[in-house]
Length: 362
Image 1: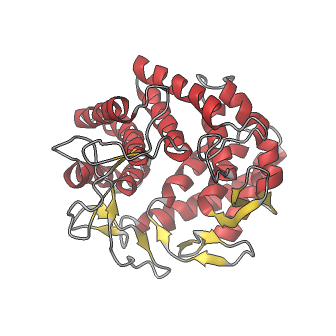
Image 2: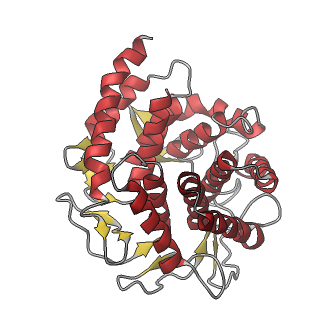
């Protein structure tokens, strides 16, 4: 295939950059050895940004990252340390579940329980258990699945976005982004074991997403339930959902998959400008935020690997030329193309890892 031939050198370049430049950042300057946690972000000189917090979600994303890099020297040990830190620093022994964040002295900071964090703990523990076969990893996986089912569930296939420390209601209701990552976490669980309860929950979640979040007029999957005030959609999330559904034998062919498949071309037409993925659009297609973020670029590229005729090679070049540099990456460019964020968050390598895995399969 001509595209495969043109893609190989470019993929080799970005993948080597990932392994030789980005991953070592989080084993070196991005690693707080005293707490055994990744710093939240590094500055352009690869120095830790001033510490205000450490998030359980960031720890879980890095746990996933190093669980998938078993061939990298020290990766297995790094993953094991991250797994221990997840339990040591963030687990709520009194109420169950995991705190959102701790402060610079490792004291609980934001004690709320959010679905986004718990979804990533499920996702990371599934991958870590697959790599390590540590029985404690499956135990934590089971505990996280249990609190999601018993505490976050709204009983209609959806889940609350945020609850209090003691699981008290906060009135947030369901939100798209944590629900998408919960679907991703359920898929990761099913990839490592048979689990009827998780499979049923995933199917119910996707049915509810179709009913509550897909706008009947535009066909886009919205960030808040349809009918909510001040709603919007994000092209990056359209592409991310498409990949999850298209790559799943369980979900491919579902009504939600059909909706995201139908929305793909309009998402490209309205939400991608000269290869750059825009951040936010109104339901009528008006640009609300023209920022281009590296995670959305990675998700668009990942989705294109599953699209017949998708110009994967060109998008690899967009990612490489606009977002990667010799010391790391640019997190954001504004609507004019100017770099608008110079820090490098510890959460971003997760998106690059999933993207490069898809490219390798492609």
